[in-house]
Length: 194
Length: 97
Image (cartoon, rainbow over all chains, first blue to last red; front, side, top):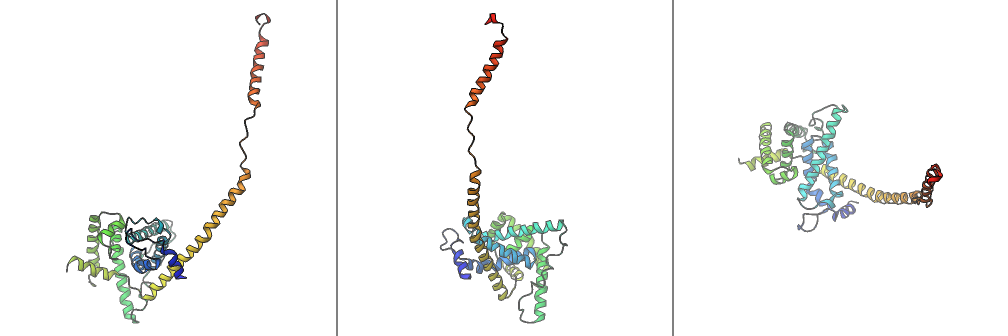
């Protein structure tokens, strides 16, 4: 089944013009699945939302591969789709908040159990430490203003300043300024671990 | 410690740590979702095309041709003009005619 889908999507996901043969869906997932998930999780602080948005992102990549013109790299294109989906999620969440359909909660708190590693060496202490680190990291990210949070979430997936600027549609200087501020706050919040 | 090293330590700290089983499960879920969407497209697109064709066929008899302008209308108007003229003519004294 997987092979059929990957073969079907193979021709549909192009690489950048002149970069040679197009990667297939399996390769794209191997390369970007963890990074997109990590990016969305750091932005939303919600593991279920990160699951859904990551899945939607790769479905969109597969469906709209024909629209990819190769003006940007495949990486920045995928992250831009993920960013747009995440922003839509925030708009939807805000709308639900206005309509009082759900109680406002710290988005980082809801996901704590889900954020535990699958098997933290089988030790409860390691699980507790991992959960505490995850809570601190997510709380530090949540405390950032939205633009700094987006820049930090992209930079922590090891996108360069240039790639981050391309994804966010910002000038590189603006990205550097946001990252400078965000890094200062993150280092201060996480100094115990650095 | 320079800026790049600081960045690397921060990136490492902020990385999402999950077991391999988690990633494999999510990967399988995405592949499966793509397969479902592909299947849906293969079914829905031809169905939509068929529905559009049927709609065209069904609506075709209702598209009546524009009614032709009746040929008598001009003559009818002429008659009216003549009748009007007749009224005028009848109203005129005979010696003026």
